[in-house]
Length: 196
Image (tube, rainbow, N blue to C red; front, side, top):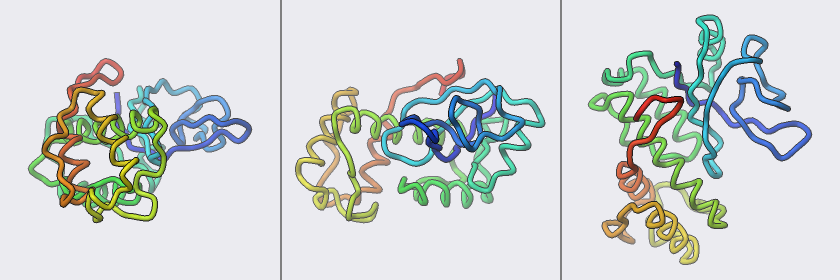
């Protein structure tokens, strides 16, 4: 099994989204080698990237990894992330408006995957409660108090509905730091049978 962060693609003829480059009905960006690849991903709110696990052959893995907008996690997830991968992953996350300041060589790839999944779970739950545009007009370096009150209350409601304690989030924290603080509390999860 391989783990990737890939951009989200939209089906040409319907309101359906999925991972770019991987095979799914209506995906106009499927790589020829990946039309029948077995993969699993979950809904990730409004973010334009997806964390996906795939059972890829060596050729499929090479094709996916060769895409400049893909981050390919190594086979050994218990190793600490390399300095080169820190730079690449930070760029992909920040381009998707996800905090990346916390990604350092002191973390394992597996720990990083768990935090990223935490971001996506929070965003998915926020969207599921009707939330949109959490960061519209502001960025990750704005403070929590700069999030409009209704959106801020819905975010806290989303987090607390997942049994994550948000009591340590203050109005003076940057959104970047608040999201990381919440995401690291996300419980272990499974993706294609692997536990993170």
